[in-house]
Image 1 (cartoon, rainbow, N blue to C red):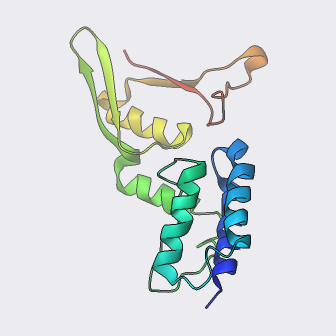
Image 2 (cartoon, one colour; image 1 turned 180 degrees about the vertical axis):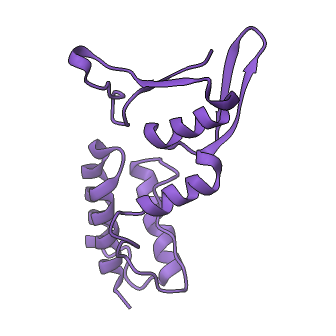
Length: 165
């Protein structure tokens, strides 16, 4: 079983590799590192360690998604598959209609597309088209200068425009 220090170091590595607010990572690492150096995590069992680390994470960055959870069953820290879960996510999307709950035209010619999960533009758009009145919708990428697909500011995939008759 890994030591508390090893558990914390691996958690910090994962935060460093993938936390959505990279500007907060140095403060997180400093705070948790200070508590670790002060011996705050010595002698704690798994659940108590997770509670303490989570409380310290929340002091620095009050993000409810940022927490350390304990399970009695050991779990691998290696990715489940080579693509980082993309294939599993796409399978889930296919099983749940690409995350689309409903598509309908409301009063006043307003279109409604209710989503449960957000697929990439390519995967989700084809499902929207299939779900709309026998393919009367047209799908085309929105482009910027020189026909280059537009990107969503701050990340995200290609922007797709769905034209409904």
